[in-house]
Length: 208
Image 1: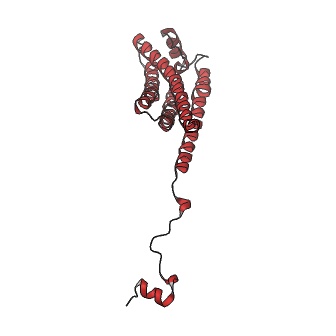
Image 2: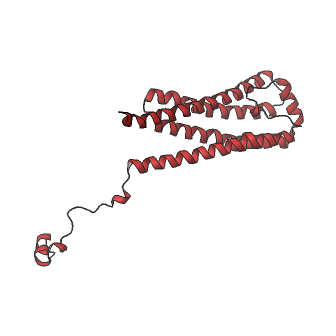
Image 3: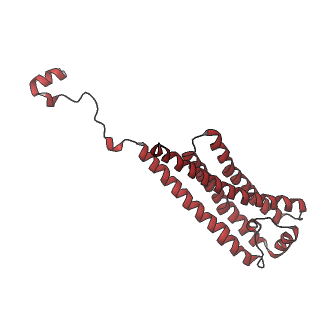
């Protein structure tokens, strides 16, 4: 028969008695510092990816596309919108291959930039803003940017590929592109506000 812990202890000493509680490896325990470090790594990765995709889409690819359109700028490059005359000239200058390339970069780099930037902004705001009403107010800006940016890219493809150019479609697309740029700027300001609030919250105990 198996001996009880007391019998084993009387025969072999206390070394034969297993510990009453499991040994915890404190080196693997999740601490607030480790959690904050993981969150910081995610934010750094998201920020780098957003910056890279913005540069790739807006500063490099869309500029290179002008070589396929007689030097005319792509609609997504206009911060303050564009008119029917520019779209007419663009449609006349771009062939099916050029339109296909613009469609492709909009669905890949354009979509990835909008989504990754929005997720990064949401995470950063959540990590630095404690008050729920203010957090939701700041969240609304990157969420709106992502939605409007994706809509704008789809509207550009539809406008340039339509059989007949519609002035109403041009106005809508121009407004969406301008709104996406304004919401991007507003989202950056929201990120700045969140970082300021987070820094203020961390320094508050030291001041007290």
